[in-house]
Image (cartoon, rainbow, N blue to C red; front, side):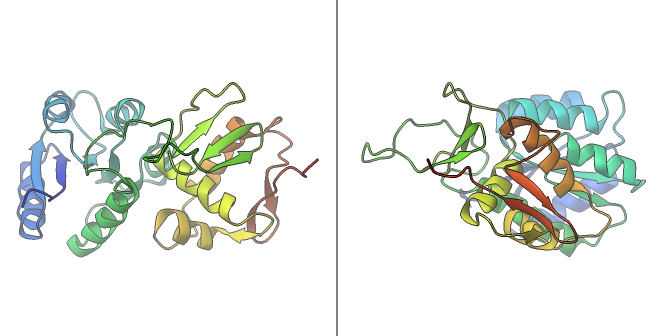
Length: 248
């Protein structure tokens, strides 16, 4: 099954690794396991997985530190798994760029559903596990679709955010999906529930602040003044709304 996504499970609990490996292999995935960050880094360099299931409580370098490294250097899906399920860990995990967060004990079917959702976000126009290389034009040499977004420009075809000088602004895949949803629905208030469904392909948990965290990060990148946002505006009692600059 050459097209099967490669999944890396990183957990110091051997039994958990074996359980996830058996279950995911049964459902068509190629699975590698590692029990610490050192082994995980080595496997990622060799196998370039499509997604990583990453335990927070690793020995030595913990899962949060490894997730931060992965987000800075690789365009792959990251799902954090925690034995504690503490809110602070979940918020920190999402804040550093994890795509999803699941607390132990979890239902294997729920984990697979969330994993499929994460993989879908990274499968658009690219092979699973590969780091996409940005092309300046499409296959026909035509200019790609770009949308002015605050002080930046959003390239919808190449999945890039560009600063006024044309340089790439680092964003996670989840942040791009959020910007895409806003760009496709200008001047329309969107609830957090809608944003979760449209950008993250899952339902909103009222205790989950990841949308708010991502909006705050994006405002620092696209707003002229992040403390007084005019592009991604808060709509009280609803959520957020993208307001394009008026045409001149």
